[in-house]
Image 1 (cartoon, rainbow, N blue to C red):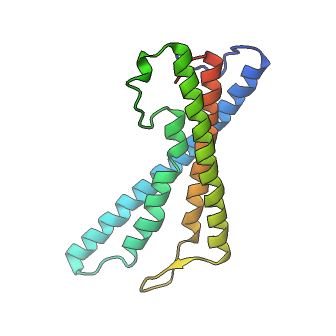
Image 2 (image 1 turned 180 degrees about the vertical axis):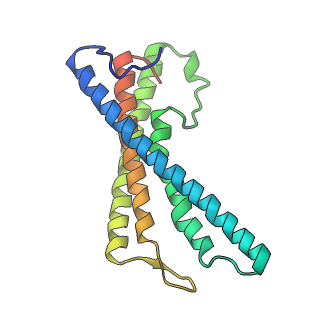
Length: 180
């Protein structure tokens, strides 16, 4: 049984949650596309650096820094919400599968509440860190001036996407009365 966001499951509350699900799905898909763009940029950048080093013994200055502080951070954190919304995070549910449905739902709801708290706190703290980094125009030690404060915003954006996805999955689970 697949989730149909247009289906009215149990009155007007379900329609509102369907709108939320579609909005969160669209938002996290947009974050996923941006994440994929960073992966492609990283491939092009590293390939160009390797080719230049092979041909001329000179690489692209700052490749390590750009890959480490921009491409990797954005590629990983921006995709969190999409992965959660699709229920693709790693799960270990060997014993839970053998439990009655009510116990499975209870444990799933408990896990979602823990996920909301965990990712909510990560979103909050990483937002504070990103604000601090932006105010100070954070840089790293390198042989050139390299600003890292813009990449600090990928974490709170990704964590907010994950919080919204966990919330949608929680609502979906409660509506269907089934652990996802």
